Image (cartoon, rainbow, N blue to C red; front, side):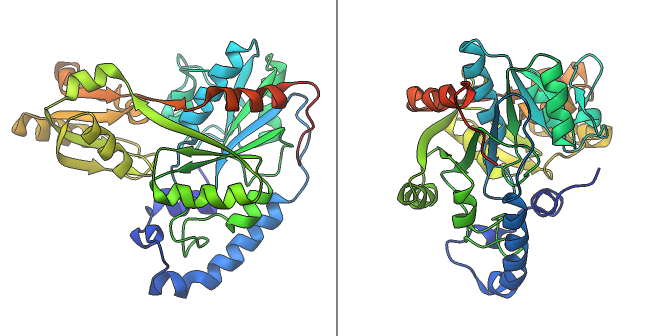
Length: 350
């Protein structure tokens, strides 16, 4: 399926290392004129007015290309909204899936090849609609009973008017070198994106994330601190064991760090491109490697949506899935924002 420019750079080609330096290097400076053009075009698109969905739309996006924690944030928000008595639907584009939508994800009928790996993961937690046309997807969600829509990604997409616009920032990586694609990871200049954002969710500690938080604070934006916590069962299953870190995500180093924090001994890493479509040959090679070294293969929930049907049952004991959940440091702060956004008195932002 066709990918947006930012998704192409981060997923198809992999995020270049020079993006994540504190200061732009020579290559970044040489590419910066292209970044200025890309960023200006994106900002112009972001300023276009959006269509009303008929129900409040809460957008969870990020400033950069690549993974920052949007999906676990959307899952957490949907759970909080459901606890408040709302009927949340998550709206996704369905990267990696062949179906253009709009269609509600059904785990009994769909797989990752149909709707994308992230949508399959999301549907385990909340009713999920995938649609390349965001307006059509919102219409389907509303017709199926949504009282509020959580849009996973789409901060730069102007199709729908948003009641609340959240930008997720990874504390460890922040916005990298601060330049726009392809010179750096930003989808548009930070100042311009902040103007189209209501609150910042900073996930995990780190100087890079704090620098972004300082800029956001100076511009009067609400700041929400959060952290990702791995499941206790995975921690018990991996502590002290030699593992292969297997992932097909935007920032594989984050998964490796999670495993290390759990006490696992990461002896090898197999990092595929984001949204990688695993094959039987991939799995056969991984199983053989694990057998030869008597290793455990640790992987993410997102990857498991594609590995489950391929992994031999006889070797299932070698595969450990490491789920993570987003925990807000101050739940009342995010709940106050959600109450304002999902209430009838709120005013949608363009």
